[in-house]
Image (cartoon, rainbow, N blue to C red; front, top):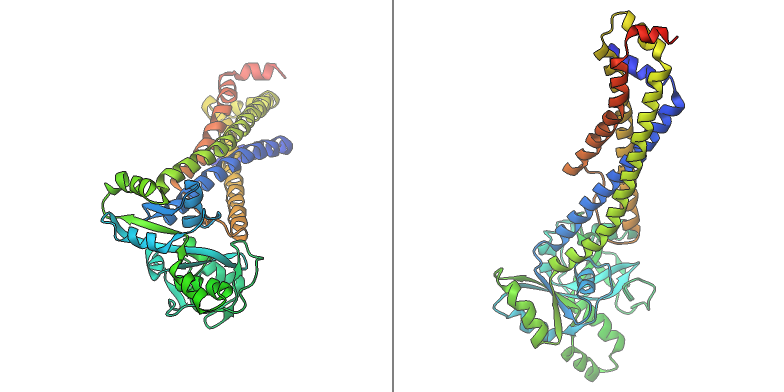
Length: 400
């Protein structure tokens, strides 16, 4: 304990150098912490929202756009497909469950999604207030929607055309809130959910001139896409090909497209990891220079310790403890800074109504941060500690 306390005093006997070393180590560790947390949380968010969805079927276009718009609701859809065609797919022997999705309107930037109660059951939604819709133009609010808009059960609101808000208001067809969901961390938290019939009614009332027009519109009803779960894993081989070659729709495999997306994101994380590595290398060199200089400057102090009976190993341990103090301080500051950066990213994504990711967390991979800090500090201190260990008392005194 005396060695640890003495190492602390020695460390802060040169406050400017100590502060600089802690800062450099902290910057590298904060960057690495942020990269690890962001990668972990994004992977968890994708895995959570994609759970149980084997394929997404929609209008032809970009498969990745179809996944991002239909599962994560962070992109514009590729178009609409006939309701009749989707119903035919529902009867396909390889389809175990089909959930239709209709998009097109929003409320204060939150998307209004027409679907069936199966969509709520798929994500195991739990109601905080009220319940599921029982008639058209009733809506269920996700937790984030309710929190940011202040709406509650029984309130009315009017959607606007377009997915980003700011479009023409559908003032003649207001929605009434039938339920509010508890926060589940899934994509439902930032959606306004309603029946398919609600979406059709809003647009048919907006465009139909008479009863004949309404009948034509009912016959030509469309949905935006369908989320499908296979009956057997073997369907993954044949079903997408069947859709892509025999229909006017396309089938996109979420696992394949998200792997491509993560590969693209991985380029950015690799750059951040490289930056963190450069900062840690710089910090390691700085620690080495500081400790090496400390050995040279404290020759008299080391001689006194040796004369008072301190063995060589204790003198070397003093330098190693000084390095460990640096590692401990830098780990605390770096991990806290990384968590704060992650919290800022979470806040930004919520404001942007984008993918929801968790806040504070400690994935297993994050243990590499303190381990790396200790490793860098000890490696930087090895040569100075060895130098302090091998110098004889007589030489130390003679140098004075």
